Image 1 (cartoon, one colour):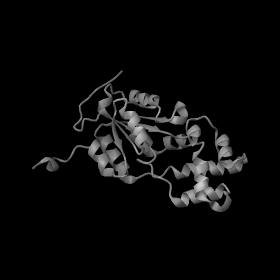
Image 2 (image 1 turned 90 degrees about the vertical axis):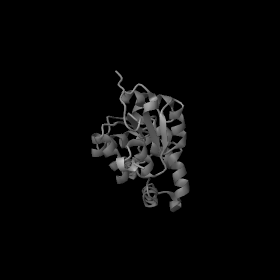
Image 3 (image 1 turned 180 degrees about the vertical axis):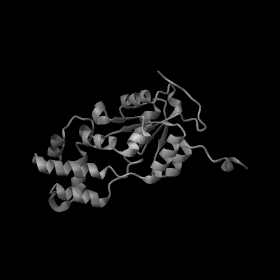
Image 4 (image 1 turned 90 degrees about the horizontal axis):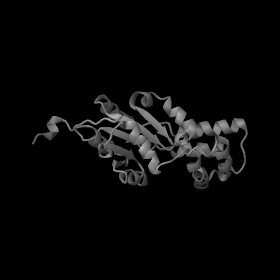
Length: 217
C-alpha cells in the first residue's frame, strides 16, 4: 500500500544514511585506541586503517563474521576475549551522534515526516543502533546492509528503503548521505538527494519550512 501527501517542503519522506549524518566520525584518539587494542605494529595508523577498510564492505554486507573480519584485518585469528574487545571498541567508534542533526530530525518528525534509516553497517553495530532512543523515536524503519546482504550504492538498497517509506513517487522522497557516490546512485532512481557535508543548515532547509517571517519581504 502506498500513500502520498503534500508537504510545505515537497518532501514526504526521508531516507537517511547514518554515519556522517546523524552519526559522528571517529576521532583520531579513537582510531589510535583501536590500533593499540589490535596491537598494530608501531601504532602506524595509516597501515592499520588500510587493513581495517580493505575487508569492510564484505563485513558490512554480512559476508564476514566478526571473527572472519578481524582475522583479515590482523592477519590471524584473535581469541574470543580479544575479539570481543576489538568488536566493542570498533562499534563504540560509530555510536556518537550530532545533537544538531538530531534536533532537526526530531522537529521534522514532530511535523509528521516519515523517516527510514539506510546504513552500511555490520550486524553488531546494527543491533546497537536499533537499541538507541533516537532510532526508536525517529525512524519508521531501519535497513542495514548486514541484514539485507547488500551495501549502498547497490540500487536494490534504495528500492527497499523507498518501499519502506510507503511513498509512491521517489521525487517526493529525500535521500541524505555524506558520500557523493551513494547520492548519485539514489538520484539515478529518481530520488531527491542531499550530499551532506556537515552543515546542519543544509538539512534543515530541505526538511523544515522556513519561518513565516523569513518569507516576508
